[in-house]
Length: 249
Ligand code: ADP
Ligand code: MG
Image (cartoon, rainbow, N blue to C red; front, side, top):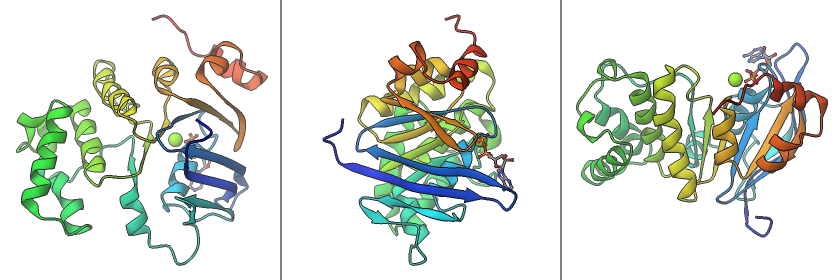
């Protein structure tokens, strides 16, 4: 993995919302084709880290680079960067008054000025890959949570991002719908997509990750292979965290 090119790099990132540090000197690299899974207790800064990478939060110091170029300076056009860094959140924020297809077409047509016909074909291909082609003309309210989340993933993928960020995308789903969404992410990983995933699904984390980053109180406490992290965590904090999950399956 080391010889592969670095796609995204965070250097000495500090983030503070105004009442104390939230991210303290975070440095990490994501290589092309790598799947990095971020885990850690609630409130440790996982969402903040992803949001900083997508320009949704200003940072106090440090820098973030995409393809070797600094993106955390005042010249950055975030509307362009966000086409390269796709993000899917816990709440599938599809536009309720638009069909599945129109939700998907909006970004590539408006932000990238692409032709409707070409994008529609791509959207159909992606929708069938996530098993939802027959829902192309449905409205979000007619979909289950798992289906909405799969549409949200397609909506991000159609922009052809270089890296995808996923922030607890299954956390709001009923248990029976979690699998169908995780399977889509596993499939993307198998195809070589570069991804950063925040999840509390530990078995999925172990299966999908090339590397696990364990965040604790705004610091990277561990960064290791899933095998090492799950079988021999080095810090007490990680041990305690893992003990709160019951591995039954
Ligand atoms: P996680 O995703 O790991 O649960 P977050 O990144 O959401 O953690 O939050 C990290 C810390 O930053 C928490 O203490 C949280 O209360 C705080 N925080 C998150 N968002 C904001 C915000 N918009 N304003 C102020 N504090 C925030
Ligand atoms: Mg969070």
